[in-house]
Image (cartoon, rainbow, N blue to C red; front, side, top):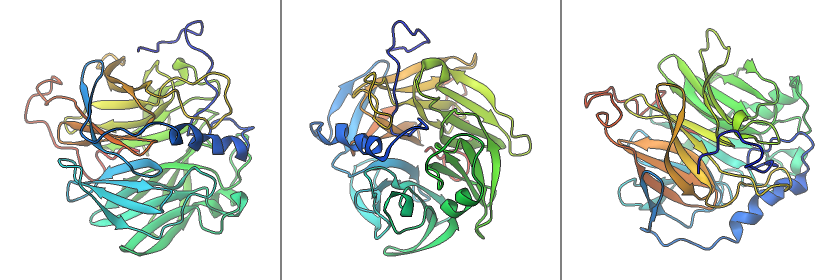
Length: 367
């Protein structure tokens, strides 16, 4: 379903997993886990008919999945916040194994280990909303994985956020860090609650790269010197405020790339340099902030040369993250599934067959 701006056709969206509303309560955050928990499980290997492309279920039964990345070995790595783990998934067979365990688990049903990324062969995990403000005892920050069962906190983002509050309204002083991306030997981190992007060095130094109004930054990707960032938009999440923007670290002024679909939660760049975005879908209406979109209303979107989105696959069920393995999009969903969506070769995208491979490192890591 296309969701061009049309307030008469689209109910006001009242929130999703990205926790946009400034008056949000902890009880409302808990609602983010209610809807997915009652959904029926899907049989592994199932194929569904979507607009434009078929999506095939690669794996199901994961617990609390939000972020994912392609590792240096070509496997997909996802966080499971209910278990406090990072799981390795073979993108061809769906075989799973535990890569790391013992990370802080989710405290109130959301966040915890929320994203994963690699610098070289070393894995890092972004952990959010596990501190004392929500009844937890752990650090909101970036954790380096030292072994399958040990880790080191390299950056305390909660402490930085408390010491450097944002200009926009907030109720969690530690923020809600949503996604991170390797960049110039460190990381870029979005905070969907404090409406800003942070720059983090491996020595733990944290600075604010760019601050926004209430636009709710979510997923991000880097291609060359260009930083792409997804925006869910403020409550109500109208299609016009669901955007992908771009900027550079040298000139951090956001420029619109494409807009027109509600609740954009991630952005990724294919190996041929095509920009894709992920809409979690439509809101159920006047629901508590923090609630997910309507089931089966998410869409994988391609950004065309004219800055207009086109739908690659629709009817996705609560998607949260997208990354690429060769010519296939791997879509992680809130209800513990990973789906594969073929997006076509470089020739299909009008870029020829010999396009530069941007699939690893800084060039293509989705939320």
